[in-house]
Length: 464
Image 1 (cartoon, rainbow, N blue to C red):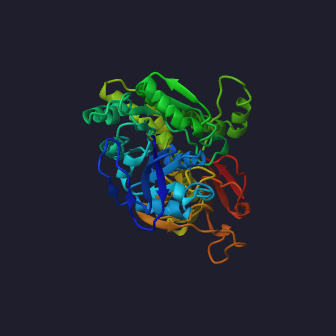
Image 2: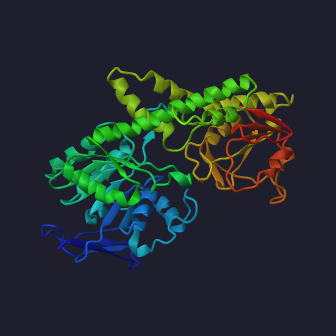
Image 3: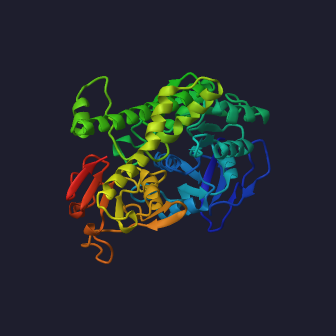
């Protein structure tokens, strides 16, 4: 009979497998997130372990549960697990809504993957301040999954990473354990396609690219992924799928850099870059609209392409266009700070006597995630010049800048009359507007630097 996994919540911090594992091994138990997993013979309801509950892993876990699968979400950060349990995440609404605890269990212990039928690896990628990829977290996660893998499992890597990662981090180490891809275990790579905060780009409608080691590996990966996506597109290998993700991110970086350049050109010609972009977007072929902003944050565009560029440099094959695009994107928040500096100097007062408010602390509208948000660098640069800086974002109550936590303010005296009002700020820098909130108070600001190119407000209005 096919093993079944029943999830119970006994009120103690253990996960236990109470029946014998495949091949008659002894039962195992491990500390975990307050739930018990028991394996029994019977119905074949699939249990999926999602490793990494970040911006891609958590939506994946939720989608899998809503598709009728049982889920163990695994993350090494107890703080992250606590935020998910309480609904304090970057997702809009309560991410646990409609997901009973007995079917969606959280754990901090990686060995919980041993009980799963399938494992989805969603560990976020990072780069250091020099743009060098940092693969330590992904390597640790993959090594732990390999250590606790068992025959019959499906393992799908989704993290953005360098070409060859699936082979190097999963296929080869599994073979060393005697678990051969396509025979004993089933391995594939399928890059995540999550666009946080954009309803039309949520996980379900998007097609997924899948590169599998063998035909059987593809069949198993497709069975896991089909319920949570809008279709599958198969490529010849995991390496091809890994390259697809890097190509997608490079495409966005180059076009965002071009949007920045065109916005500067439009300002030089006294033209509205949004009007020009919207008009160009009416062309039904050969154009995809990208809009100027204060910069790019989050987990994708500014990071992913470094996994390609680093490998190419090691082979003596630089990619000049992508490298220049990433430099342009990375420099954008600094450009905002320089433009703000110019406008502040017009007051004729010392910078230390001036107060600025940065509007928008999330890295994009519609979410509460401030990971690598442009506002952080802008605030840091202005603080270094001695300017008093506040920030306002209805979805981000606290922002960490230079190792210190800054609490957000509400400059609208209709909601909070205890702090500084719009007239008290020499300059408001509009980095992002959260949809559904009232920003009418901006009209009363003496000067507004509009990095969205859409908020024509304030006594004096300036573009980046």
